[in-house]
Length: 106
Image 1: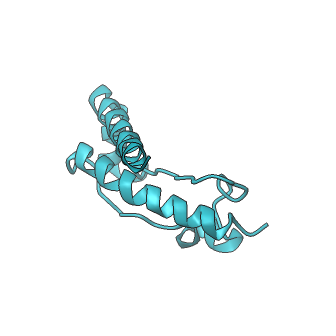
Image 2 (image 1 turned 120 degrees about the horizontal axis):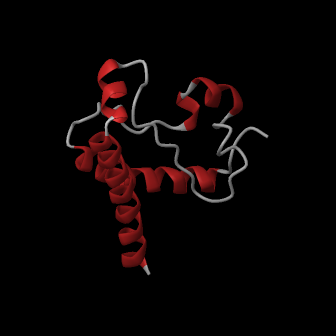
Image 3 (image 1 turned 90 degrees about the vertical axis):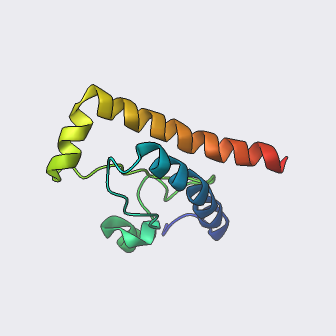
């Protein structure tokens, strides 16, 4: 298996385009923003055609990497209650952005 179908890839990218800006806005620059990258832009995904978590996916899938643990700022931020709460709220904002969009489509 070399990755999900093109339909799943397209739907996943569409979901990421809704999810990502909401998460970035909610974090208000607290963590750096590396943008949206497809599975094939990662070390593992470039070899397998997708990340292991999405390789067999039949539905849209997103992998969210909010920080880099070797980055001192990120490491300190995620260790605080305020940082953890900010990330949780950001993830919720991303999910709600996608859900709100889906509700408007139906």
